[in-house]
Image (cartoon, rainbow, N blue to C red; front, side):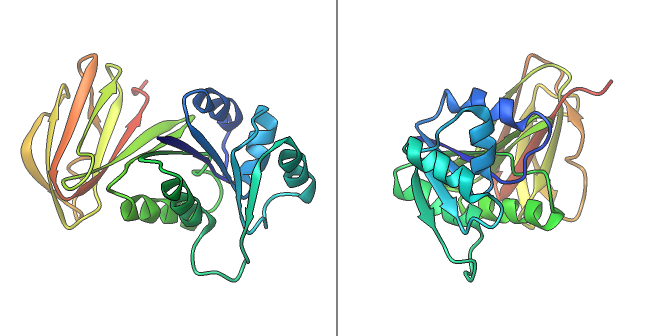
Length: 214
């Protein structure tokens, strides 16, 4: 089952992107202020979840009347709203989770998103934003991705001390190359074919794809 989690940190274009991606998902969860993003996109989430400190009561009431289930948490909790949303998606049977509207706002929240992805590395997880797309790959979970688009910039960022990685269809190919979390060797590779493929044989890697350089 595919789940789409819409966060409370949109950037320019997030509303339109959420509408596009919602057409190819089985479960739509608005995470706290993500309810406003959904409302502006004309979407009715299956679930509204959070402590609701970043969304108005009017927005919640409007979506609840349209049929969204509301799951409220106290602000005095150990988990972030996004972490709880992941757990709810898994509880409902999701094995593929996409996040959007999570890269704006506070930098500490953005780093927290990566921590939540790492905690769910056994799932197919990715971030899709107007300016980039990212996948978490692991030697013990989903381990490969094919990125479409010649000229796209690919950065391979180890999230474990070491990671063994292969990359094909890129300017600087890698053949089971060991990357470490204390170097930047994997930053700013470039796709030279219509499709570039990245495989992670061990460790955990965040693969970030951005548009080609001008």
